[in-house]
Length: 87
Image (tube, rainbow, N blue to C red):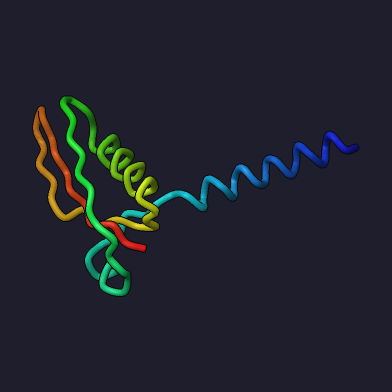
């Protein structure tokens, strides 16, 4: 019985901890009500737009942001994106 309880508890905690650290991509209107805490940039060669969002999300999380707004994006074989970070 203790093992089942421990497994259930760990499962719930892993779901909660994943949600607690994910940064959301927001639009300009949503950003108006938030406190800016800096910006980040990412670049890559030959990857997808989903990779760009994933890289921005990871950098936002590392900076302690709960959300980010993409302020610049260039595409092509070598793409670049910049995002403003918010609490």
